[in-house]
Image 1 (cartoon, rainbow, N blue to C red):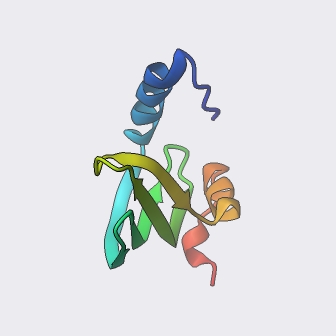
Image 2 (cartoon, helix red, strand yellow):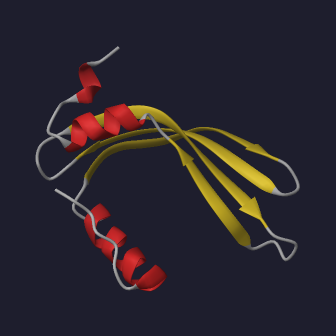
Length: 97
């Protein structure tokens, strides 16, 4: 499977949303929230399956930064890329320590 984003931000967002819609979500828990005046970080646990049968489970961080108007200016998603790649290639990473 390969994700090719075309059509600028709107086309890329639509392609990404369509792809994510094929994942099967098994677990999603917010473990903690940390915030300041300009950002919020969520520590989460997520477990999902990809359409090819690969399975992923791990803790992740999602960091939202806000502009002067309080609107989201940026989102960073901190993940174990190696686990995602392994699951994307059909492995079950939920059995790893």
